[in-house]
Length: 400
Image (cartoon, rainbow, N blue to C red):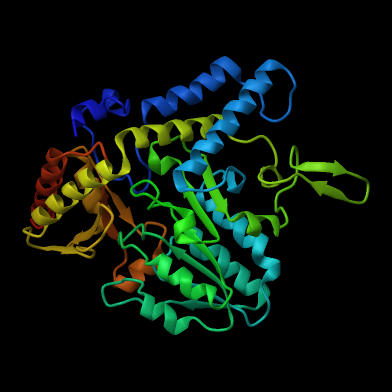
């Protein structure tokens, strides 16, 4: 790939030409076409969708719904199965709230220690309120979810399976297709946090057969504040809305109301129209490069970076076999926050902390970690700079 050409598509490099960005797992850089399409809505249209009968409203609605078609096609869904939200966090919370009334005392909700808080905490709260049990899939010594360990905790009491597709800290992929097949034998509902997988690999919801899936636009070059909730049509039709307001109601009387068909019944209020349009533009950009090409590039960088980091003395790498382009590590004896602050002096941006996944740190037996994650705009030179920066950081702190 011509990365010099690719970087021209990301305007942040115009403002910060020396940027060495290794935090795409938190939020990817924003592509110009997504920015432009969102701005075009504000400058050329600027009105609401699904409300007016005048030409600007009609054009806005057409653009909004065309974007839904593109998102649906991207993950192999029907357009009415795509609900636009503020992000994966909101999507996962909506599903937990919508399904809460179906949970009975004694039911079991299967989750894991690899979960982002957005996937774990909603179900922790549901379990408390409904007197259900959270059941954790035992991880392997490496920190992986396996089919055999999942099968050990699957019982007739299992009502919900809420798991990550790819861990945001470890980069490990969950064998969700096989897990879903097993969950079906207990009539359990499967909910997948795909925030880390959708930006990097082809995800087909029909092939995976999950009931619900969530991801965010900002991790795939799109604007912040836009996310997607996918739900099987039959599952969504069986749920009641959890947010109420404008445009989702069909008819309203003094003592009751009826609600519109999918997907509008789950999109109360004015949506993030610019974000939706920007997300569709980002998907077109990804499709233009192609996910296999993106994967080949990032996997090459991933393996190159790992090879270089393994040669550094005094470095602990926690996920050397990760499928996603994420390296999670610590410099021995140096707090991750201190290390990341030092790396910033070299224009290198990495993430340090718990990564909104405290249970992963607890599993690893550390307070926090450093995470370097990459995407299509990263280069071999970026990797060399990070390797050099880690060595300089280690040597600086080891003076004291």
